[in-house]
Image (tube, rainbow, N blue to C red):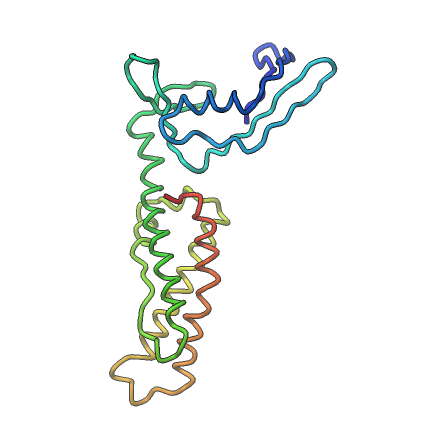
Length: 214
């Protein structure tokens, strides 16, 4: 969130002259290499005889954002990093805190998409046998990337994999070679229903992870 027309240091309203937003944002966008933060909300606020402009940028998608340096200067590009009121170029370690979770979530999105396909391609009990994959989820669990999610997002992701793990166990038991002769319709139906029941939690997890999309 940016507030333009406010002097934070002196806590006064300085106001701002109206500017055509489309042209202004176009000039801001040209300062970025690749993607710039998307301006989703803009509002002019009148306080007595002054105007304050409030701008809200979405930064949860597209990070890290790369800013072009001065033309002909060095470095040519930098990634701004803000800590408190300090703004400077990001270090390698700080960039990794952004990129490692994104890479892990990208693999997780691919895995969830595959697992959703498993549900879609198991319309009949006779199609049982294709297990859900859990490798990418175990990776993000082990490297701590899940901590980048909110509690609700993390709960949705873990719930989806809890359901898939349970389903894998039921399907494995239902089609075990040593138990084929003793299979019953109830066992097979329970396993098949467990696969079908995974669809909603998988779709919910994919929805919350979409902000880490490629």
